[in-house]
Image (tube, rainbow, N blue to C red):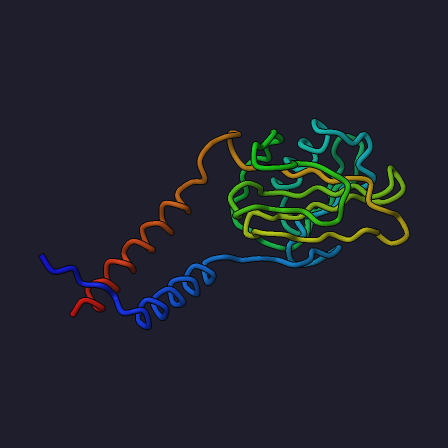
Length: 191
């Protein structure tokens, strides 16, 4: 039985093409800013601030019409004009993959399937809180350390749906694409 080996040069080219294709499917952000295109809206002043309150603020915010302002739980809530399509309910939950809240300006969103919303609170009741949609982002991001002159008090990440549910097929889709590409490459390289 004869074993066909892929020449090293062709294997290197195939590996580089595969890595480039996988990177093309990711969307890494480097920094979020106040009022940017990822902004879902603001909550002013977002007091009280805690898991249950922040979840209620984000849930109300996601259901608002674009470019509207409302009062909810004695807070002024403004929905930005950024359209992200239908938005899932926020779920505050522990994730085994890492922190879901903190007070640092660098946040790891993982592979882009874990989190949907990022709620950042700035200096108690002195200024508004910022809510970003992060469901289309992955990797390490940074958020502002200050909102005007007021410093970051803390942030909370929210995931979509039920905690612990698989990612909805993105990983399976990428695996299928990768296996299909390897199968086609094998046919092409083995001629």
